[in-house]
Length: 132
Image 1 (cartoon, rainbow, N blue to C red):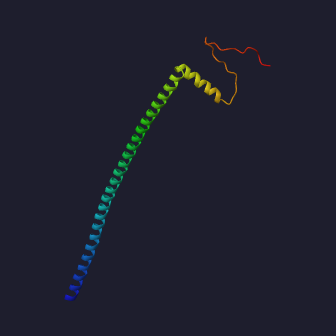
Image 2 (cartoon, one colour):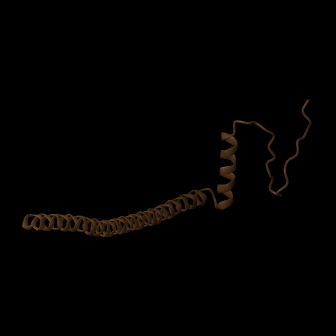
Image 3 (cartoon, rainbow, N blue to C red):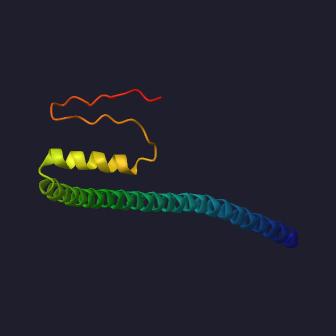
């Protein structure tokens, strides 16, 4: 009878150990799921923070580029304005410069056409005779 009792106690102990191992595995798996979710959240947060920093740096670079481009355009416009003033002054003022530009444009035009040139009174010289 002692052997039967010790056999039953051994089986109960083995069942208890088996249940303990199963419960430990279930608890460990649940703890791992929580830990994994927490680490995944940290990784997503770090990725979002990195993406935000990159976007901020790209926006700052675009702003700097636009500012420098605007400064370059202002400098170029100032240079063109000074060059135009020098040429205009050399040609007797703005009207002389505009007349020079007009004549230069006519010279470069590949299309030949009838042109009316204003006289001193501001009226065009009309064609004296009709072409045949």
